[in-house]
Image (tube, rainbow, N blue to C red; front, side, top):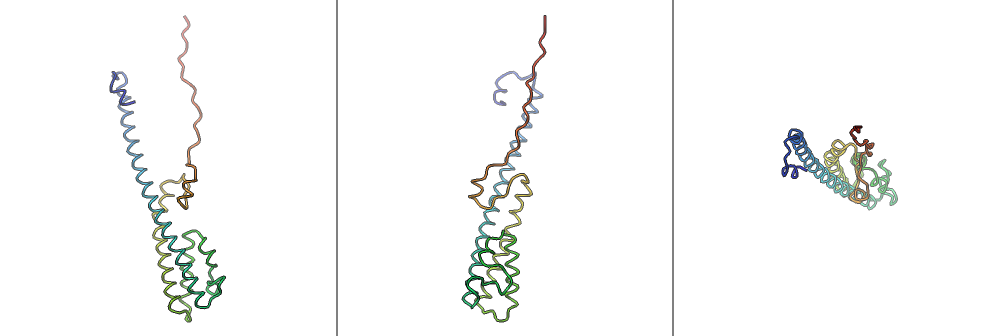
Length: 181
C-alpha cells in the first residue's frame, strides 16, 4: 500500500498516510523483536530438553550402580525414600531435579555407600543442577508469551496448533445515506 501511495498524488490524505507509515514501521520493528525473543526461547527450551535428557541418563546410571551394589532390581532407590527409576524419570524437569537432590542427600548420609555409587550420585546431582540452570531461561517463555502453551518437545510443538485470538465480530459496512432528489 505504501509503495502504491508513492506513485499517486496523496496530498489530501498525506497526514494520515504518514501516520500509517510510522505505525507500519513500528509494527515491523516490534515483529522483528518478537521473532528474536522467540528464537532465544526456543534455544533455551532446547537446552532444557538436553539437560533433562542428561538428568534422565544420570538417574538411570545411578539406579544401575545401586543395583550392582546390592539394591533391589525393581526399585534401587527404595531404601533412600525416592520413587523408582521409571517414575523419577517421568517427573517434570523441575520436580525431578528436586527429587534427585533429595535422593543424593539421602545417599550421602549412608555410610555403607561404595565409591562408584557416590560418584554416580554426584553425577546425578550435577545433572540436576544443569536442569535448574536451564530452567531459568526456559521459564522466560511463560513470562514473555503468557497466552501461548509451553511445549515439552519439538514433536509436541510440531503437532500443536498455534494459539490465536478469537475472530472479531464483523463490522457493518459503512454506507453513505442516499440522497433523494
